[in-house]
Amino acid sequence: MVKGRTWFALLLVSVGTIAATASCGSDEATGGSGGGGIISGGGAAGRAGSVGRSGSGGGATVDSLLGAECTTDAQCGDGLICAKANSSTFGSGGPSNGMCTKACEPGGTECDSLKAGAECFDFSTNDTPKGYCLDSCEQGAPLDVNAKCAGRSDVVCVDLGDTVPLPFCVPHCRSDAECGTGLFCDKTSLLGLCSKTKHSGDPVGAACTPGADIPTCEAYCLRTSADGVMPVTGQCAELCSGGSECMYGSGSKPAPGGFCGGQLSDTFGAIDLAYCLPNCSCSGDCQLEGDLCRKWPDADSDLVTLLGAPGVCYPVVAQSVELSCGEGGAGGAGDGGAGGDASAGEGPGTAGTSGGGGTAGTAGTTSTAGTTSTAGTSGGGTSGGGGTSGGGGN
Image (cartoon, rainbow, N blue to C red; front, side, top):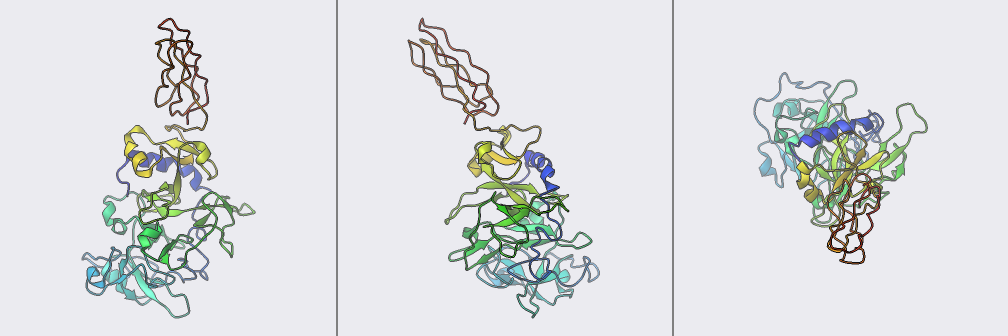
């Protein structure tokens, strides 16, 4: 989990421009294909039971491990079980890294007695109810990230209410590695569970039709057309837990391919449901509509190392620097003269060879078109020509 970053707040403001179209309406990022159910997990039915929070008259006053990671029932405490990744506890699969929960009666109040606001959800894939408790949460920036959905990056806080806000902590795996040997992370719905079957489909950025009977995306089809606009259009994207790494590759130690900052709710903070903003080196890498490659600020240089890329794809905003894909250049050098700097670049060009006009220096990383650099003149050799303005370095 990426925590406490000032630039994360800036990024959240910036992506708000896309939230009006790439939204998670009542039938959008909530799955919607499970016979009208809120949570869709390969046909799982949705939320059952009480409409409000703390329906038992105030809820539990003691701490509970509801929602915590686990590998055995004993780790969860009295009355709770560990829903393991290789189980079918939640219908079509199990939560990555395990999750402490409790069997319950849909419509009952036993979950609220564990933790105030928790409710019983029906994960059945048939007509026989199969209820388990999910913890509640509050969307927005948490005072303590570890107190929100147990601080888990493989869980999303998402509003499941129909008419009033009712956000809950829902499991959503990030990679096959989190699921374990022989299991695969199914990212095709809001309920991202570990499955014994590997799902395939179109990559992030491909066009798709939201709500199609046969999903075409490897992950999730995010609506991009505004409400009421026909035909409904979408692009393949990956849902994720706000503020965390996402779009992981394959293997036992996969590298992240993006940062989870694509806002999908009016109130947004760490662990809230979002979509992944892909890594990029320049704007040509960005496949989602309207995105450009924005350079991570120097203050967040550790993210460049963590994510393995100098930038992240998101819409144009102020107070950011675009990494364009043109070729900026540095001036060559005369005999002993220094090559010109790449304008607005991240580094100077290399000095040219002495005498007879130096070779052009290599471009530094840049964001905007550089002006022609000045050639060196010292040493009696003819000066190398100034580097061309390439519209930005690689």
